Length: 340
Image (cartoon, rainbow, N blue to C red; front, top):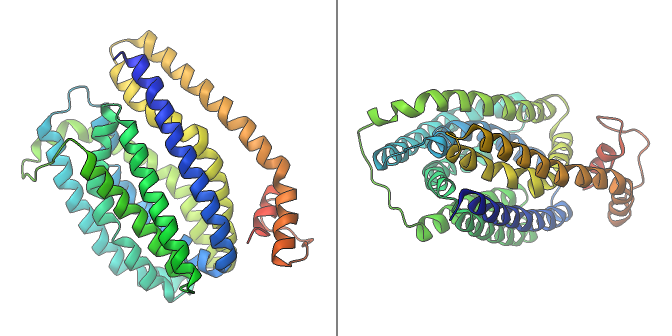
């Protein structure tokens, strides 16, 4: 199969993955918003912000480097898999000790137990990231789509059931863990590669230069939003952090439909075209155009329907419209504030 055909097919599966996951996420978000309080979302969002920043070092340290490496060897994949297990365990222990301090800063004692339980996800997501890198390198986005859909569906179903029985924020924790663990198991079972543990880490030296730069870039991007969420919980309280979390979820839902689908396929495509500058430039230009075609109409549509969503959910929840808007003075931020 040619690279062009593989890329087109991969974009289809990636778009299907993100589109179906987006629908499931949006429906589950509506149900969770009906069953949980903003404080529940606030505590969960603070814990998730800390874990996602840590996940950059456990899940992504070798992921992009392995996808990009022209001739990644079996030994490099095995060494990265072993190192990811170690990174996941170390980060889990660090977060276990760190969450009491985080809880004291945001004045939310329940954050300790919630954060520590959610941190166990790193033990599963870190090694699964190496399997994901191997599939991405081989344009195996069909399996990645099935992995995401299986994890998201099962996680949403279990989480909503737990929320229905009144377990509050723990329903979000259960959803998160089920999504991570079951998605990783699906990828492991259906993958044709079986990793081996090794102590030969010298083979990773070729990956480190790209890995360090990639992690720094991802960290700066992740820290911007996660730090803002953490500061909102610290200075404004858990309820406002919960509203902010809902806003980010709505934005991420739209973002995942187009931009994420294209970007997931772009890296392995560019990696295969490293020796062909002209073709690589055309591929990049095509990816940018596809992303813009999907993103701009989606965000414009969201801005147009935001006031109607605000009135609808206010009526559903029996809440009057508020005249004072929190955050940015725009209809979208206002609708999100009233969303739950």
